[in-house]
Length: 200
Figure 1 (cartoon, rainbow, N blue to C red):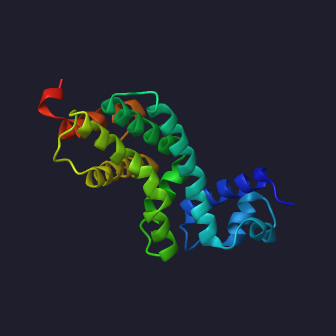
Figure 2: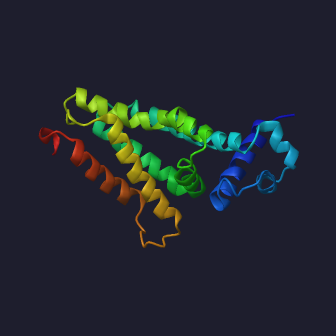
Figure 3: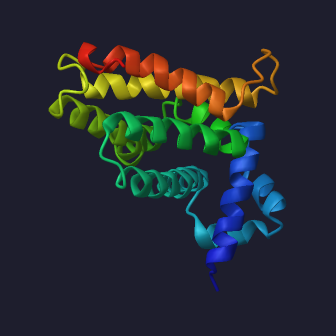
């Protein structure tokens, strides 16, 4: 009999295994061992390894979408909404370094299943940024020449790189807090998108 708790347990185990070994080197048996379940149990919940990977993204990114959407819906200022997105993403990636590693590596692979996910479900996450940019343009807070679909990729690229450095065990000497990075990244990014009348 399936259970939601066991499903979550497998997802957590898979995230850890994928982060440590990489998707292609990871085996179903590795995930089963980490989750402390029989190999066959995995197939009660998932079709294959790709299905598990997509489920990792769906569950974890889905939670982030819900949390960020709830927070930004309480705000009217696009500048504040942008800062909320940046802060929440960084908080989650620093807390869950396995997820950050999986996102960084696996979203760049070329398998069609992952490409399709990247174009569909994952894009819903990044579209939060483009919708904030669009709102800022409509309110004449952000520059009219900013293209939201380009801006969201630029911002995510910066967020992803910060997460990668954190996940490297601070080998690059970057021992900054979430608050420090949020403040810096928000300031730099907003300086680029703000209309001159809204720079203060």
